[in-house]
Structures are given as structure tokens and as C-alpha cells.
Length: 150
Image 1 (cartoon, rainbow, N blue to C red):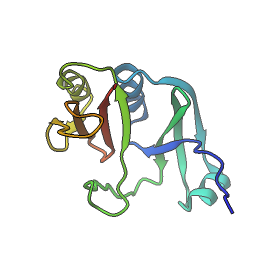
Image 2 (spheres, rainbow, N blue to C red; image 1 turned 45 degrees about the vertical axis):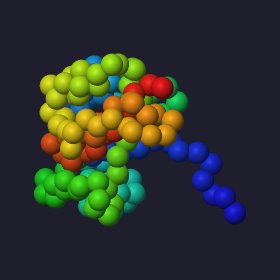
Image 3 (cartoon, rainbow, N blue to C red; image 1 turned 60 degrees about the vertical axis):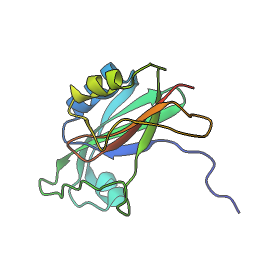
């Protein structure tokens, strides 16, 4: 039996909601849909985080949604920076404008604290042979793959 009908959004916990919104909207072109706060019994109960107080925003890339969450409470929290090989790690892949050199996009991302995880690499075979790809991480540990438009 199939229970899931569609993906609603991907969520990322961030250190600074305003800075994250600037990156996702100004560099990558996402559209801000809404900002909101979550707290009280609902926030604590659904997340399993006692005392959770969250400032959040949803941005859209076409039909896809990204939820950015800044926990204002509790004050104590872990800062994880998983590598792509670590269990539980994730990445989001975005199609970027087909440029001759994806390093221009990487440079724009770097202005907002996103750094290459490895290096820009050229695909050697398959349907995207010759295309240059990049994996980036931000200071919070989020991972992003940039894939050129076919």
C-alpha cells in the first residue's frame, strides 16, 4: 500500500533565518512564500524538542518548497556537519543556468558562506558528459549540489 502522495517540502535548520533567506532568494532565485513562528505545545510536541520556539520561512523553486527553520529556543543545541558519506546526511540538488563555467555560480554562493565540499568536476560519461558539477556546504552543514541545465 502506498501512503505518501507527494513531497511537500524539504526543511533545513539554519543559524540565521534572514541570512539564509537572502542566499536562497538573492543568489538562487527562490521566491519567498511566507514567514511564520511556531511555539508552544504544538511545536514541542511535533518536533520532540521541549520548549521549541521556531522562526521559519518557506521559499519556492517552481513546484518545490524549501522550509528554513531557525530555532530561537532551546538555546542549547548540537551543531552537526555531516560529510556526504555520513549516515543521515542529505543534499539538495538544484539545476542552475547552463553556464560555460559553473565557477561563476560557485563564486556567487561563496559570498554567502557556501564553500566547495571538493572541487568542481566534469562528468566524463552518460547523458551529462562534459557538464561541470559542484557540491557545496554552508557553515551550518547544509549540502547543495549544483547541476547545470541540460
